[in-house]
Image (cartoon, rainbow, N blue to C red; front, side, top):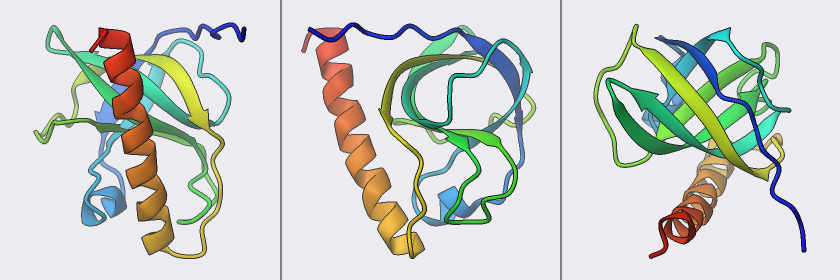
Length: 131
């Protein structure tokens, strides 16, 4: 039996990004980390908290190799959520690593993978919630 790795909560402020996720149908909250320790680069199921509410999301920690591959960033697609949360302080708890970050040859292929990541995340959320 494989043991579940536990990650630390980290905090930060939601800042403006390139809006590429939004154009692909997956808007993201770009987080400027202010405290805590980040897990290794990759794609994670997360719980993000702000305004005394918790949400599940899919987080990318990495260099976005399909886009530019230069600077480390943290961005979260919050599931079933589409509101303006710029400049809000958020708390993020990585729950489980879904996969490693990888470079795709097109945004269309990246979008397909994000769809698969979302399906995987939703199944894991159902397990967590006992549905």
